[in-house]
Length: 113
View 1 (cartoon, rainbow, N blue to C red):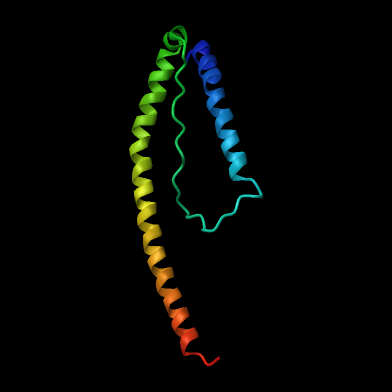
View 2 (view 1 turned 90 degrees about the vertical axis):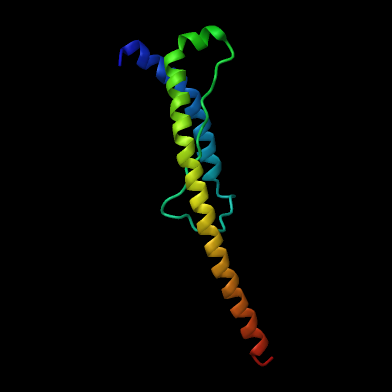
């Protein structure tokens, strides 16, 4: 990749990098309460492409913008599939926990006071 194009790509991605850093800082906060275990495979949040408001910038970064949009659109299907898989897993887990809770309540009812 030519040096000029690489420089433009780095400048363009700096905005997305800042947004990602803020997201990660929020997720790493000690005040964030996590009630579920993180699965070995998890769905990574997609960051949509940033479209400049200026037509001149759109033309200048046309190749990079096109690539970013195409990459996002190809990855969003995988993301939806991951969310569907995670939803199915969570439903199975919730059914198991509900059954265990029922067993727990039955045990308490049968146990002498």
